[in-house]
Image (cartoon, rainbow, N blue to C red):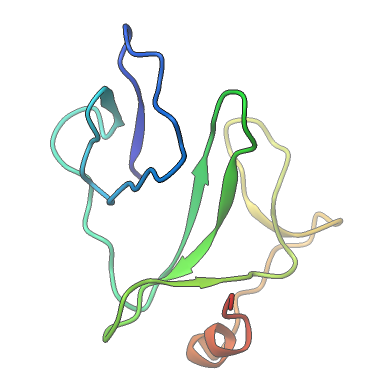
Length: 116
């Protein structure tokens, strides 16, 4: 997990054209998590979630897959939701409390759910 927030005296920046690189804290922001050190490295062959909150504009969230040979790939993950248990969110199938079952063939899943 990696999290940044605006510094105390910084009102934030316009999101128009903003680019954030994982692990690089933009000017005017501070790293919230981890509280010290650098962001943990991303591992190839894994699916990650991202969530960007904003003020005065809609936020954005989604999933990406770290491929071994190219840049991260944006994907959809149908039916994956988080349980509503505060503080201990578990992956569940949307609309139920059933555990979310990860796909057996991740490469095929990524190809079928790539965001174009």
